[in-house]
Image (cartoon, rainbow, N blue to C red; front, side, top):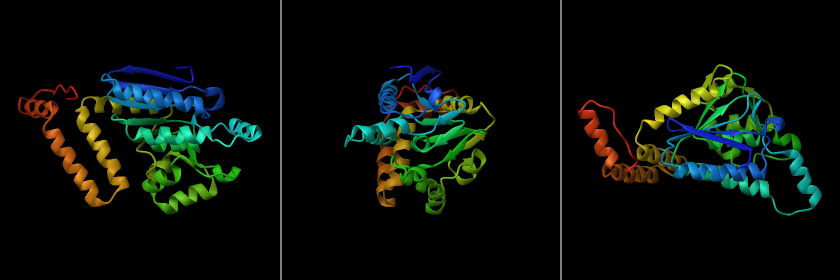
Length: 260
């Protein structure tokens, strides 16, 4: 890993930090490739039970590095390396078995907002500003923003934000359902970590199956979702953690889950 992405693990929670503060965490293919690799590593790491994705106080991320995008035009290349890796990364985040919690501060714009929407939960501090400015430069959200935001807030609100390019406050984002919680300035990371610690006490296989079932619900009909839920519930009944959870409850002690 370069210094573009920082990471640490404590008490079952990995904190992953975007580290291009001088560029307001403008996203590059290199950054996104490293982030994808790191998420895959953390998914395999049994010491990690939840992931917090954070930025800098001035910006979670302002989206794609537009200087790099202009350079692509100048080079005459037909490929879109930024588009390829960003779509791969954001889609892969749904498949990570641990919850990914976005800790948001400052600017959360364009591809940065799409990255936040690809996380499972979002906690913002009072400084966060959200927006989709792509129509200002002849583009549109192209990394799942039109799909994920619409599923969260409905088509009318999604169109208003994307047509206008306006920025909204953290409180407004909470009112609309874009973020789960708003906390005081500089407290988003600590609040996200505290939630991650709570998740870390739960059965890992339960968290994985709950996450998968909810994403199935968002992309399929009710019958398909109910079938997947039933299969997942039956799977958990046969796990060691399920037996441990039941015995711990009866014996009035904390459960010791091992992910099996």
